[in-house]
Image 1 (spheres, one colour):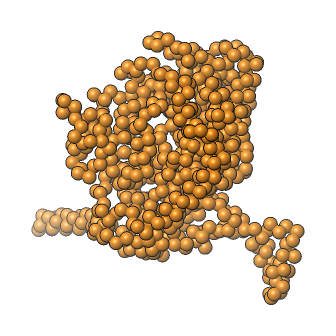
Image 2 (tube, rainbow, N blue to C red; image 1 turned 45 degrees about the horizontal axis):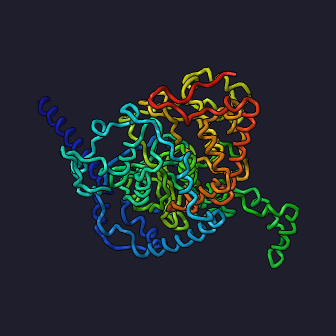
Length: 619
């Protein structure tokens, strides 16, 4: 009898377990089934109509607008998903509707008008100054011959990419799919542009000066269909990993909210700020008799400090025209998508070529983020604001809350897309602590800020005691000063190349925050060490000349980006001003130490011998 009861109990447990598993599977698959069922609709909506039907298209029925809005008390987490699932291609109906095309054309005309006003001031007299710059002998110096040890990948052994083997008929290659070598292998020219970019990385540069793959890759970042979106773990602010139809990936940094004098229209009433001036004005308004003279009486009551009537400005995020508030610490500054774009172009003009390709893109938050993501933590943060705009806030350390939500107009948002470097499993990178790292503390100072001879200690420490690393730090210092970037705590190199390789200039989002202030402390490494490459010094002198003016070249280069204008004129002018300051610092070093000590000759190395640069000289 006991055995029969035991068997029945086991069967009951098994049935309960199977029912629970079935319910879990149904709950998990329901959103995907509803989304798949609605994907065949070829109806088009205007931008103004889409947010109104937003909750009906793919969200489960249990998520009502009331539930979506009431999330301000949910605990935040910094743990995020890195899902790289490939999403099947959408139907032909997913193409941009004609109603949106008109809005994009009007927006493009507006941008073109602003762009022309910026470029006209810096217009070259004859032809393209940027093309003339790249034809200058300083920008045509050949590299040393590359060996297998100097390239990141060996195409014949390290890289294998056959889209036909991926069993995905939707794959859209940039080249001819029938381009095969005599051995039957796919030739490198038919690889997707992101893979060709990876193959071209070597010991001396991320990409070559006149590599056509870079322009093609920038175009892919703007036009390739987004198939998957996930939040990037770590970091202080929200970043998204976007996967494209051709399996390439990019890091997306969205444009942040504007900082207006009024409460942003996307704010809910329960997340608005409480204003001290509102309390004061309310008292005087209550004291003044309601009527025709109430407003005049109120103004008279507060005429001593009329700015009390100006609503308290919310600490939101910046537009191109706004500077970083003076009371902000460098480590709490906003990350700007336009700074990432401008940094790529500046790095290229300086001929460093150490910033991965970055392009601006206008993203549809509904179709290209919400519908493409498999990250539930990101998906749950989407909502519709009181202004009928689609918003989300994600999860991160700072600025990921209802008050700092990212909102579209109504569902379109700008952002920067930075091409991914090769996967760490294929090409390991080493992270180095910047010797001139700031303290990242409100009161404490770093050692280099209090010790004027700090560089002498750095020169005795590997890898800065030999090779090119210290001079590369000087290049990075100049690069950061021209942008006004104070947030350079670490840098990376490719592990395969050891210490004799370039520094990768990653994460430049905190540049171009202030155009009216030049942060001289960024130049402390150059001031203390008094060392610079001859090639860098000559290029800086060239960019200070009127015919190769840095601001003019930047304006001409940035106008090619889809989100132009990227920088306003004051930021362009600030780069010219800062360039002169860099040259003044180098001139003072030369006067004090001598030209041969300060300027390291890297232009006349003998091919096939030891590295061109010698170790740091000692005073």
